[in-house]
Length: 67
Image (tube, rainbow, N blue to C red; front, side, top):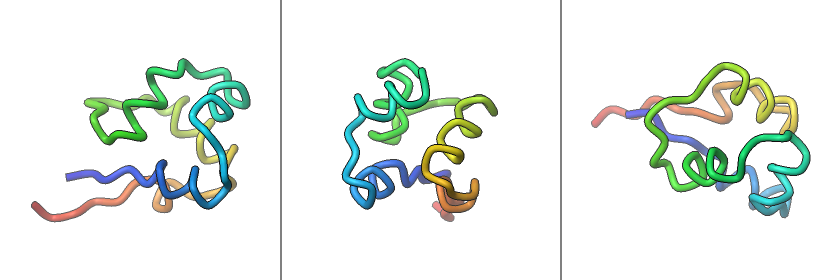
């Protein structure tokens, strides 16, 4: 299972989903799905924008966890 740490990153930066949408130009729904960890797929452009915004690596944004 892949875990998304977007909620933790938002909390650390004291940001809201709307802030991320405004800063990255991404749709709020896309960000919300990642935040709630209900996204089924994520494209590279989305990952790139989030890593640039939070100045983090892909490994800090996503984590593989054994079921």
